[in-house]
View 1: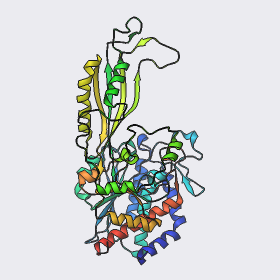
View 2: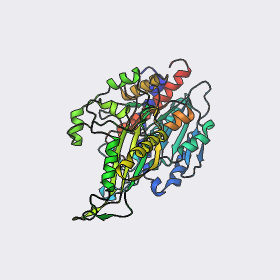
View 3: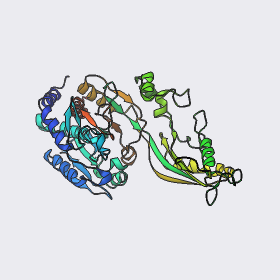
View 4: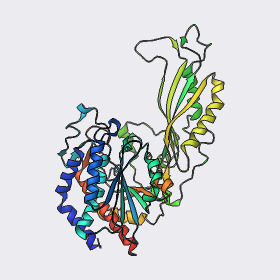
Length: 462
């Protein structure tokens, strides 16, 4: 490490490690369950106080749901501005009986803190705040401009994030957005994610008659709603695994050379993964490379099917209604509206031949997001994670899941990155959620190195 100030900051973090862990334990002791509206106001107030003690101009941004916490550091002229996004709400802790220790009584065991929300996302955004604090403690100032935005509804789908960001776009203008969320690679190596897949949720409601009928008296006469649904679903995705919905894939932007090179460098122990999940084979298409499946192609998933009788014993019923819940993961530059329109057109063409009326009900969605890998901020993030963790990070052009990054890349028009700080087995959303202390401290170092690297860009050293 050649930056003496950053070396001093790292030394400060090491000296204060126990105190930082104690503060995290105190923080996660306070529930903030968005789905149940438990503790939201209290924790938002705690964060407001944290930001004010860092010398930030801090406030609560009201939404039609839970408030967001916004903080802005002192102006650093000529330096880039980074927006640090996270969320202070957590998942419900149930089932309580499955926890080794109570979810809101944080427990330190074997180098890990166990508590609901410790990894997702309180420990990760607290690491960012402690990185800011460490810069101030050692250097007396921040090397770049910093905006902090902490959401209170991420765990319920961020229903008001897009409209709130759009309404306050002028106050959220930054050069880049960095989200500390998610988990590291199982090897423990740092990770940079440049994009996320989007998603659209929909339901197929099939009706073939006014009521259920007797499978003997009317079998072969009245169309079976479940059979109609099964055939409709089969028409949308063939046995070869390829989606057969016309127009669905038309907008897709394929990966470029930089994305291909990054994917080629990603480690993969496919036999170990398959053994862990008890898989005998990968899903079709058989010839599709592993990472391509998760980053560059849409998927059509049947989440559940309901209809007819599924109780004990038998019932000779011919179902008149059936429902399927589905989702489609979207890749750049698909949209939920475009994908849903393609589904509706497909259903309109196929349903009459099945003797069925089918309603397509859209139930929500999220745009995909992609930041080019040749962005000038990529080397800064690589260097920061390398300095903090002692080895170069892995780089993912896209992740398979969905996060609301589109509000930054599309609404604000700025590059967005995800740099996870959590251990791969943090069990977020599950009982015994945990965060390894080493990961937490490495996260503080990562955040500090990022700020230093952005400051160096302003000084011509980036």
